[in-house]
Image: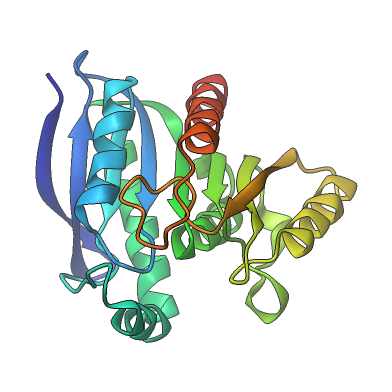
Length: 231
């Protein structure tokens, strides 16, 4: 039986919190799960539970510090995302990695990270910032582009991303072009584009009306296999 708990951890002089799911076997590789713009909602906790069911120690930090938006509150979700202090988010994500690597259930000396929408973008940002503490990044839909791009020189993680073919939030053409640039710089980067899908296709709660069961299953299977192979 998967063990789940709400946890608090130190974050650069303050505290942060999150949702932790432990695997049946008691120990496994660590994975940070980063929320969509809705916040740390039940669906994201469910991702942690599913990863724990696959043998991982999964932690979703609460980047909004208790705030969240219902799926009917897109304006509120947008406000929460745009008002998220980037320095606090980076601090909380780094602290989540600290927490996982120090946890007795976590094996290995690096973690994986996955995230959705805003969380996909943040997954790549934190992978670039944390260097060899992140061995694998599996973003869904999002990536930091243009002025939001990090210094990619710190990226040592393997990257396997999952993109919607029809996405006004994060155009897949721009992200695949980023992948070309990163591969040209010697990075291990693959982006899968799922034909006929829209932004949020892997969210089974279907908040945008874009859930695609077949594409979601393919992307999930690839993600689990990818994380296993690199952690």
